[in-house]
Every structure is written in structure tokens, then in C-alpha cells.
Image 1 (spheres, helix red, strand yellow):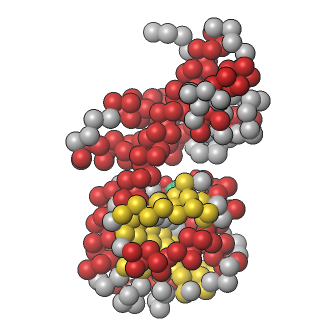
Image 2 (cartoon, rainbow, N blue to C red; image 1 turned 90 degrees about the horizontal axis):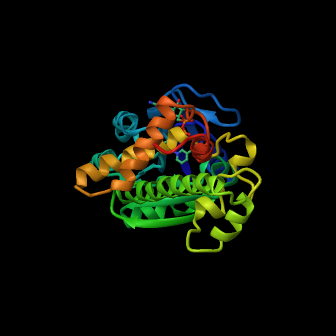
Image 3 (tube, rainbow, N blue to C red; image 1 turned 60 degrees about the vertical axis):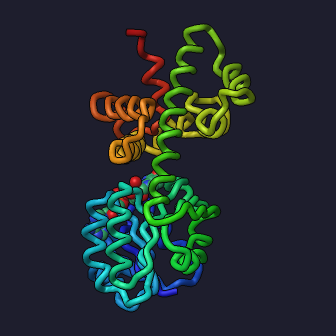
Amino acid sequence: MKIAFIGLGNMGAPMARNLVAAGHDVLCYDVAARPQGLTLAKSAAAACDSAEIAITMLPNGDILRSVADEVIPALPEGAVLLDCSTVDVASARAVADQAQAAGLGALDAPVSGGIGGAEAGTLTFMVGGDPAAFETATPLFEVMGQKTVHCGPSGNGQAAKICNNMILGITMIGTCEAFALADKLGLDRQAMFDAVSTSSGSSWSMNTYCPAPGVGPASPADNGYAPGFAADLMLKDLRLSQQAAEAADADTPLGRAAAELYRIFVEEEDGAGRDFSAMLPRFERRERG
Ligand code: NAD
């Protein structure tokens, strides 16, 4: 397929490279990054000229809206705008409406799986948008990922993503505070892992991404808490879920508490640039009160 790829950061560049490796004709653009091994256009609009699909992988909803203003008029009628960024539900729905009004298909398809998943082509895509556009994009999801879930109309991919990450932020905090309590009760961390990972307290945070170094499968904890999934990005996603909860009038007390804890960790403590599982060394240093 003829593809425009806009936003060549930590995630976008490896995703675009996988599409090139699969034999697609990919013309790329980034406002700053100049990654190796990709063909670059002079502007986002130039990358879209005669593209069948334009993929965006951008930092936030405001940037997505401004790139969409440029890209939508440049795409041929019937093309698909596929946004893989994590953005607020309102921006995803506004951009999809704008694309559809211009005769384009539109999908929001945020990903789970991080930089490792982008490089290995093993991302999970959570997709919102119309079935015809979904069908057009499916072969590309199969190159860039290993699992794709069509969640319903536009915005529902973002809704699934922020609900998933709200659960993840809450369970990671719960797992870390339980490890720190177990330490103080004299419970060995390996014994704690062996008991909980096979009991009803098990979760992805405990079993697959254990925040305790040397325990469970290899995780960022075994690499000095280098990300992985940075606490800053978890804070971004928790803020998006709180913004959505506010707009939808949903009561999310634990989501709100998780957002506030990650805010303190990133903005007032040493969490910036560390993996989000570094909540464990944070709790282990602290006392009650
Ligand atoms: P990044 O900051 O590394 O990359 C974003 C890129 O967008 C940068 O290269 C930047 O120069 C470019 N950009 C900014 N404004 C632009 C514009 N107007 N036109 C063209 N390019 C522009 O971010 P990332 O880690 O690649 O993440 C991208 C998206 O994926 C974010 O929404 C993030 O929340 C989401 N995400 C990231 C991860 C992760 O582990 N990094 C995991 C899942 C989802």
C-alpha cells in the first residue's frame, strides 16, 4: 500500500520501518526527528499526496488536531486517516468527524506494548471507527502488531486504551505498596511473588512486569528501573482517563488517586524518566503518615 507516516519518535520510527520491511511504499514526515532507513517528505501534506492511508503517531491531541488540519485536505478522497497516538477521546472524535466530512475513512488505534512491541511488530491495537476503514487498515495492523481489537465507533479505541491504563496504574501502585508492606512484615520478596502470582492478588503488574528486582520474569526493575514504560507516560494516560471521567461524569476514585500519586512521583520526586514500576523503591523508603 502507499502509506504516509507522520511522527517518527520512539514508537513511530520502528512501526514505519516494519511497514517498509513488509514491502509497503512508505513516505514519512516528522517535524524534528530524522531517523535512518526511512524516506522523508518535505511536509506532512507532501507525504500524503496520493497515499491510500496516512498513519499518525504523535505526542498529544492538540498536535494531532493541527496535523489533521494539514493532512486531511492533502489526502485523496476515500483514503484512511489512522491515528495510533494516545490522545483524549474528544480530540479523537473531532478529528474523525473532520476526516469523514472530507470523504475519508478514520480510525483511532492507540497501542499497548511500548517501544519493544513497536520494534518487534507485536503491538496490540485498540481500534475505534467504521468497519470499512478497519478492513483497509487490517493488513497494516498485522504487520505492526499481533493483536487488534475493534472496539466500536470513533473514540472507542482511545476509551479502551485509557481504561486499560487506568487499571494498570492502579494495580501497579497496589502491587508496589503490598511489596513494601510485605518487606516491613518480614516476608521474603520471592515468597511474596510465589504466593501472590498464583493467588487472587495476581495481575499483569505482579506476574509479567514484577516491580521487585530479581523476582519473577525479567522486567525494568532488573535494569535499574530504566523504562520500559515511563512514569511520565503513565501520568499522561491517567490524566487522560481523569479528563474523560470528568466529561462523562464517571466516579473513578482509585483512578484519581493513581493520577495524583504519579503526579507527585514525576513532578515532585524522582520519578521523571524512570519506569512506572519504580513506585516500589518509592514506597519502600517511606513510612506511614
Ligand atoms: P515521541 O515523543 O518519541 O515521538 C513523537 C514524535 O512526533 C516526535 O518525533 C516529534 O518530533 C513528532 N512530532 C511532534 N509534533 C509534530 C508535528 N506537528 N508534525 C510531525 N511530527 C511531529 O513519542 P512516542 O514515545 O513515539 O509516543 C507517540 C505516541 O504513542 C504518544 O501518544 C504516546 O502516548 C503513545 N505511546 C507511547 C508508548 C511508549 O512506550 N513510548 C507506548 C504506547 C503508546
